[in-house]
Structures are given as structure tokens and as C-alpha cells.
Image 1 (cartoon, rainbow, N blue to C red):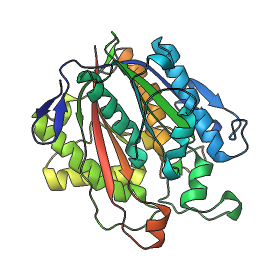
Image 2 (cartoon, rainbow, N blue to C red):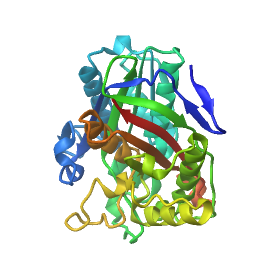
Image 3 (cartoon, rainbow, N blue to C red):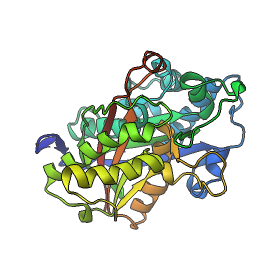
Image 4 (spheres, helix red, strand yellow):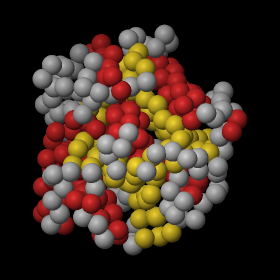
Length: 338
């Protein structure tokens, strides 16, 4: 059963396993530095569908099916699926799962959804509420641009602080089966709002939430940054990552610079990939990085302890038009290698 550790963290005594995981991405992501590690790269951004939303659902479902196959389980054996995305009413997830027969819990954590779904799945498995749970999420550049900014046909200019929404999906199967990747602890974040209103500067809006969650976790567990091979955020990008490190020192006197990495700075190469200077964003960014590069390295023994902190901007297209500030959230999962 989960045990409360400190004020915000849950320790999971049974250390649920990541029994299978998969990541599928679009062409731009496949051409990036991590391209060789993804399970499948879609050359067609539409994934053979008639709308961007249907394309995202197709990719999301594909990631789940590949993770199930790698875990050696069927959809009928899954007790619960935790999934979410950026689309209105999370249709990227619900439509991906509507024919699966799996019990479904829809989540909205914006770009923190992979961390949130992993946390929820691990807690359920540790508490024996479920034997097998799925955690997944997705995003698509074209569907996100249409919903949160402008349709692609408009040709709007991108600011230097804007992050590129990854066309990607990631899924993990959590169970008590033996595997080389475990989930030891989770932390559910607190909403932070520093008054940032610029929807083209998500990194600045989300950095305070990441700083709060990381500090809370380190305090709860009485650990230091050097106790981890990596403190991985997703997705702060270039602007948010710099602000995070500054905030950690200023607010908590904690220097994470030596072990910090950000999914938004890993998936693209800004030197050769156009319009990605500030990095990547979107639920699928951290999902695809964690469900490929990170879990591959944990399973291979290259990484032993990774604190994955997913960050999300809890805004909507309506709230932005009403000049509301952007509240943010960050959830954490401690991934451990055997």
C-alpha cells in the first residue's frame, strides 16, 4: 500500500514495474536526436486520417497497442487505463480507447499528463486496486495549433519563446511483473501561478511549478540532487529550464544544474530543425522521450535513478482570450532501475 512520506510524496513499497512501453512520433520528431529510439515514425502527419484530431487518436492508440504487445498482455487483461491529452474533452484519448474495452479514467494535466498518468497507474497497482494499468498521452502539432493558437493556414508568426508542440504519443504498462524499470515514489504537484499571461512563453509559466515540486520531493525524501542520475523535466524548453535552475537556487538554495535535463530540449536539434529554438512542448513530448530514451537507458542499466517531473500549463483557449494568467502544475515520478 502507498505510504505517505513527508508532506506531499507517496512511497510505493511494492515498486510497481514498467512492464512495457512504447513511443510513436511524427516525421519531425523522428528526424531529431532521439529518432532511432522511437518504436514507429509516421511520415504522414495525418496518419492516414481525414483530420488532425483523428490522426492524434490513431497515434495514441498505436502507442498503447505497442506497449501492450511489448508487455505481453492484452487489452482484456488491463484493469484501468489512465490517459489524457490537450484536445477539448480529451478526445485524443477517449477516441483512441473507445473500442478497446479497457476501463478508462480521463486525465487533464496538460503537458504534465504523462507524469500524472504514471503516478495514478503506479499508485493503483501498489494499492492492489489494479493488477495491470496503462498510462498514456499524446499531442499533435497541427491539432494543438488549431485549438490554442491559429489554424496552420493562417501562417501566424512564431515568437522566439514559443515551443513546438510535438507530434507524438507515449504509453506504459504498469504491473507487478518483473522488469528492470520500477516506480518507487510519486508526488502530486500544487498549482502555481506567477501571473504569466503570454501563451507563447509556456516555459516561464511552468517553471515555478517544477521548482516547487522538485523542492517538495527532495525535502520529503531527505535527498539531494546528487542522489539522482537525472532530474528530468518536461517540457520547459530553453526559457523555462533556465528559469527553473534560477528559481531552485533563489527559493530553495538547491542547485540542480549538474543533473537537470528537459524533454523539450532533447527531442529536436535547433541547429538543423527549423522553428524549434525554444524547444518542444505538448503532452507527447515528455511521453515519447520517457517511453523511449529514458526507459531504454534505465532498462539497459545506464541510468539508475531518474526523477521525472512533468509540467503542465492549466490554461484553455477561452481563458487566454479572457486575459487570465496561466496556472501551472508539475507532477513527479521516481523511476528506478534494478
